[in-house]
Length: 257
Image (cartoon, one colour):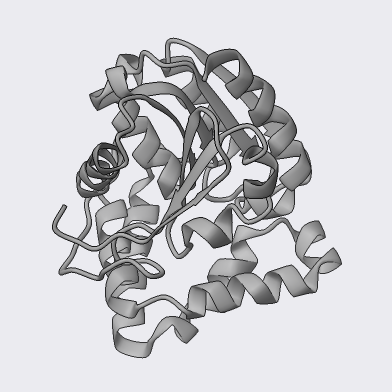
């Protein structure tokens, strides 16, 4: 691995590796799930290249680069086979990894994970990278956080909105821009039919990043897939519906991991 990657571990049992998405960190995005899942699993939460306390290297960071980092990490941790769970871009990384390395994936949980994007979204990600490089994270953090959460959730939980804005503001501009540009090239539609592991897809019914229709198309392409849509939920599912997410993930992992 050509980058220093920050890793945290909790609990013991079958291994479960958590992958965060754009603008997050492993500990922050999964903060409401780690204590519960660590009761039964060896939970590994890490920061992607360019995020949190992991090293920033020159970009862009294609999904394949994150997949390689994940494979190297599993090797360094002596995990021949593990369950994987990813949120947002982390879910995309999990999907590609499950397609490429089926022998290493016991089960995959994908939470608001896109498989592809319309051209307008690709252009928006590239423009966002340009904006943060020119003006800093403050130019996009409020908008990204607001659009990511369901209106009902952010109105009822203003402290959570502020916390998510703060999480985005803490990003290194170089790493965030590199992730945006790599994510703009995402296209996993041809990979989904190759996934051999059982997959749990979880989406929000008002998720503007991965709308219900996109999850339905992904679920139809994965050979062994369960799809659940949470009501009144946007894109930041691990924060918006923490108990409901654990209630879906735990029995799925108990069956397959």
